Each structure stands twice: as C-alpha cells, then as structure tokens.
Amino acid sequence: MNPVPASSPTAPQAAALAPMPTALSDAANLAQRIAKAELHIHIEGSLEPELIFALAQRNGVALAYPSVEALRAAYAFTDLQSFLDIYYAGASVLLHEADFFDMAWAYFLRAQADNVVHAELFFDPQTHTARGVPMGTVINGLKRACDQAQAQLGISSHLILCFLRHLSEDDALATLEAALPYRAHLVGVGLDSSEVGHPPSKFANVFARSRALGLRVVAHAGEEGPPDYIWQALDVLKAERIDHGVRCLEDAALVKRLAAERVPLTVCPLSNLKLCVVPDLTQHPMKRLLDAGLCATVNSDDPAYFGGYMNANFVQTVQALNLGREDVITLARNSIEASFVCAEHRVALLEKLEQSIQ
Ligand code: HPA
Ligand code: ZN
Image (cartoon, rainbow, N blue to C red; front, side, top):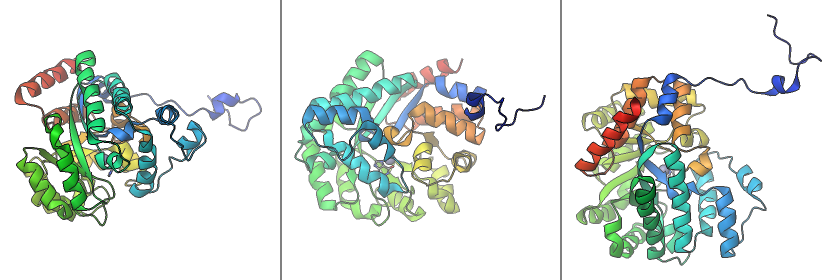
C-alpha cells in the first residue's frame, strides 16, 4: 500500500500530525505492574504546579508566575542549577504542617498507582527552616503522611534528611542538632543540591556525627560531579548508597569497587534527560551499569519537574534501551535489596515482588 504523503490534500490532518503510537514491550508492561521500591525521591520535587498554586493561594504566598501553564512552561532546564533555582522557589509555598502532609500524601497516591510498595523520601529541611518554618512542622507533616500511607495504602516508607551542599558544614551541623528531637522519625541522612564545587569531603564532620547517631548514610555524587566525588562519598562519608552515580563509568577502578562491594546506585533516568546529563534516553547508561554488574535502581528524583513518576521512568528506559524482562526484575529486586528496611520486612517486600511477576 502506498503511504499517503503528509502534504496530500486528501491526508487526514489528525492522522498526519499524530505521533505513531509505540507498542509497549512485554518488559515495559511488566515494569508497570511489578512491585518496586523508590529510593531517590525529593519530596519537594513531587510538588505539582497545581498544588504549588493551591498552596500559594491557601497561604497567601506570591508566585513569580501568573498561571500553572506559565510555571510549567518554565520547566526547560539546561543543567542541575537551572532546575534547583526553580525547585527552591516552588518549595516557598510550604509553610504549615498540613502543606507538608498534603505534598507527601499526593506523592504516595501516585506511588501506589505505580505499584511502589516501599519509598524512602528525601527532604531538605534547610530550604524551610531558612524561611522560618520550624523543623517539627516539616517532619511531623511528612511523618503523618508516611503513617497514613502505611495504614491506608499498604506502602511502607522512611524519611532521609538531606543537607544542602551549597551551604556550610556548620549550617548542616546546626540542622542535624535541630532534628534530634525527631531522630526516631529518620532512617538516615543524605547530601543534595549543587554538586560541582561542593565535594563530599566538605561534610566529613556532619556525616561522622550522623553515623554516630546510628543514622544510615547516602549521598548524591557523580550526577554532574566527577568520579572523585563518588570515591569521597564512599571513603569520607561512608555512604551506603550513591544517589545518581552515573559518572562512575568514567573510572574502571571505581566500577570494580562499586560492583565488588555491591554499593547501590539510585539512578534517575528522566532526571538525567531533563538536566542534560544525557542527550537522549537511548544514550542512558542504565544498561551499561547493569552489564557492569552494578546494583542499579530506577527512581524518579523530582517527578513533578522531570516529566514522570516511577513507571514513566521504568517504561521509557525499558523502551529506549530495549531492556528485557530479566533486566526489569533485576532493577525491581535491586530496589528492595538496596532499601533500608529490616530483614523481616525485606522478605515481605521480595515476596510481593515475586507475586507481581506472575
Ligand atoms: N540533584 C541534586 N540535588 C537535588 C536534586 C538532584 O537531582 N533534586 C533535588 N535536589
Ligand atoms: Zn536527587
């Protein structure tokens, strides 16, 4: 049959303009229904523009954008910093405990739709305490959403307090002290924000103090920063997981170490695409990470800003890299193995995963 040229006067306009629907592979379908854990989600990065506007109105906060559409149109990032500027501005609408609850609850509903059975939520207290919001307001609101997610959705979760690396270590130490009354609500600490120029070694003391308190340790490294930052996260901070870590592939000795010690990488494909870490998802290193024997996982990072939650990340990566069913199962299993749950709960989550494969 001869195809109708798009310019033909008889060509139906809609058919000529509509993108060809791509059939999902068997592996992509499995990726959607498989039970999984999310280990790299900045909860402030789950604030959808609609909720930003609703909270701005509720709290009388002025926004720099006239509408949801104008705000969303500004989500064209060139690098990490161009995103962070708009991400911190969006978080300025969060003032009260109910705001933090509403934000996290909206995330858990999206997570449930994607068959996320366990989530470890990052939050950035300094973004809020610097505006006069008390630490307790932040943590209590998030914790209440976590408790409701367990009770009503069957999703377990942990909170990870992240230090902003563009601020001083003294500021991070003061933040840790302010969080001590809520120690029982935290599983660990992390390190995020502008990576280049702020190496992990800058935070050696606050991570040592965190470890002494029994907190688990993760750190963003090797997203935009060099492999040396990953070495520092491991050797200086004693990070148990590396957030992003995709630049490890530039250093063969580092890949060997990460594989030998089975250090998990919490990889965020759509984030890497939107922040121009990769030019195209077909160039994403996920397959190379798996082939190198690394414990890679799929995560959404800041889903409201990067175009998708867990299943969008899974499906688009599986399709772009032509991943197979075994890759999908490995990624989901890695996410549960890399989580900070207790041994008993890990067994229960792995059982959910097995049942979801059928
Ligand atoms: N990298 C560093 N800091 C962040 C990110 C990220 O992807 N998202 C929110 N804070
Ligand atoms: Zn991140």
